Length: 433
Image 1 (cartoon, rainbow, N blue to C red):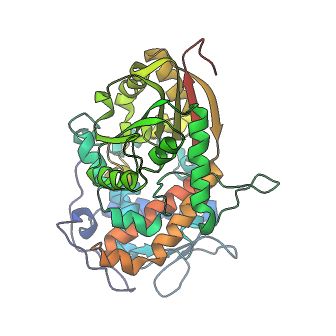
Image 2: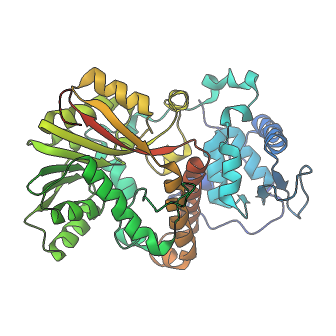
Image 3: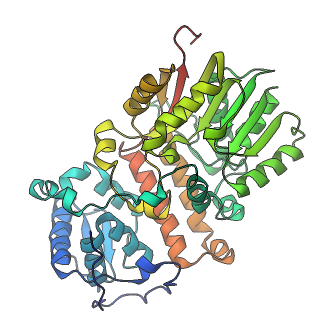
């Protein structure tokens, strides 16, 4: 697909355009000129507004269409820019338009949740049949090969430990927590209980893997070391693998400060190069970064390093299988700006890949997507409340808006059930379950 030519597009009235560094953000600074596609985007916007009951507000406060009270709201500051970006780039253009400040919402999660519900129905069926003609494929040079995986991880996790510390709780755990629930099973989440909820999640995963004193444990994907610390405190001996130099440095510091350096080792190592035999293997929200072509290699590695009678416990974000298949070859805003080279799997895809390529079988699965929605809400509120500190670390407005959209987009995915998070147990037939 050829890039749309660029020409000045009338911006309309509204707040001043954010200062955008064209070297850092070339596709945010540049507004494509795609008049026919912009007209199609306008028709699609009107369809979405009617179908989902959205309030679309034009510059000056005029609504595009009548909307019910309390409707999720999309405020267009520069309608021309928005329509040309969306017309030329689809959902990538939608995200870049937010980064550029072309639109806003007083409740970003509510708006994105409305759009994330049954997303296929937003586009007329006739247009859906043309999808292969206009959807972009993920760039081949972002595939998480052994050579590229480190750059992909560095793109996200090596931004700055200080940045992550601004919105994560003191455990520095960057994955879904498990909160206490009310009598109806709803998570009871608060910032003051987030650290305890993260420990609850970690302990459940370690229990699932049967991590005990003397256990030889491999962790694939270190994070900032909290799981390694919890495992070492149980008396396990843990080797943890990461491709992030920033994470490795901080995890080692935290492990040393806790007096656990004799039990926990953090290596800068690709999962494919893992060595040794382990009684248990754990991996938290790592498989999403592996990429579909490499799921067999990832699961084969788990099988190869697992000692007889051992257990593998994974925490994985998942999506419905049909949605995974529909988006597997699509270049998305998340892939372009947040997690290059990855793909969220379905539970079926993981089970089938394990069965086809390994002796491992999926023997237990427990989902708790609403807990991730609440975890993300707490992170998002913390991040947006510390915008000045984000700026002080050297991150510009475009980055801040990108990160806000990423957190809100993810939260909406879990609130609508488009995404789930699950703890999975894989064992070999005949092993204790």
